Length: 372
Image (cartoon, rainbow, N blue to C red):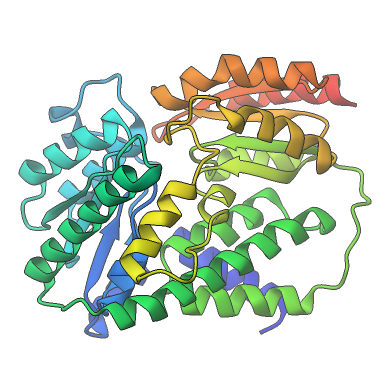
């Protein structure tokens, strides 16, 4: 495929997850949904199942409001809404981690609202370091394995998990190289950039890795030259087409991100030299720089400021999912860390129900004036 065809493939996968789901089911595959943020997909993959992201969608909410209060993350509400509507019908299970209060509520509500798709909890520790933390994480993985075997009839095999870990580490590497290459290609639009990351949740990792590596192979060195204003984004999710189109219309170019659904996913590989479940547990212990992962010193905030400077960003745009407590708590400290390095910060609040982004446009227009 040429470059344009590759981008069209990423766009199709990102924009039509139901089409992907139906294709897997038609081929006789068993699909397991994976909710944000850090589901152990390697385990699902190793059992011969297809992990498929469930991050919700931009849509009006109706039935999910029967289960959630209004003041809760719209990502969780839209995941449940899609489940109630039958958009996930055919999936064999959904794995939901316990990394924030909203995710815990999603899991409990899912059991009653979508009883046809079994809910499997992945209970992570906040104190994930040391022998106690990794043992707790491993116990959570073993619970997931037992529940997956019950829900799908698939069997777990450690050797297959070792192979799956290699598949996922290779994908991590490809995505890190992609993130490093993107700033040298100002011709890539904000929406195309989003498609590259979002499509990974809906495609088999072997397939997505091959396509990303094919794209990287077609790109030359590129150039950072261009008239667009370089910025860094941060948040849980930054995939709204209407918002991304505003970035392009205003000439704002994303040269780096700290977005949970984008680069944050790929920073940490599973280490070698350990039994596979122990290695996965150690991987989680090594993870950090994320609002939903506890760390007393909050190194993430300095990381964002440092990365923005290194990538040549003139400012940081916080795409804040409304009612996302972990991100909201970090924002004052993030603004302080960026201000200490002379980086302006803009806060754009979004949710899955937004239809009118004109307020965001006005804010970003004013922010651009500050940067140029």
